[in-house]
Image 1 (cartoon, helix red, strand yellow):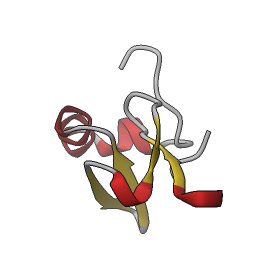
Image 2 (cartoon, rainbow, N blue to C red):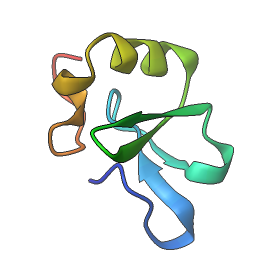
Image 3 (cartoon, rainbow, N blue to C red):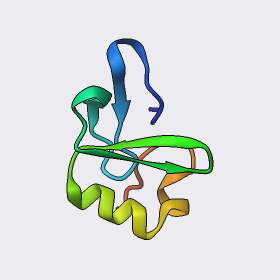
Image 4 (cartoon, helix red, strand yellow):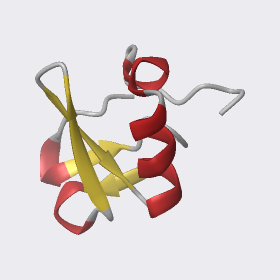
Amino acid sequence: MTHQATAAGSVTDPVCGMTIDSASAFGHAEYLGQTYYFCSAACQTRFNAEPARYAGDGTARADA
């Protein structure tokens, strides 16, 4: 999975792993030159609190 846009704008929320469309994502954040998209306020808040934890390889963590 990747947090970057793929065909048709599909992206993966780095916190929960949900596949979403970047155009209709709840929100986004920039971290180390990359844009991350989120399905909800809760996921964006968790990412903003600990971006290094979730940015890694763009996949959601099992303990998230």
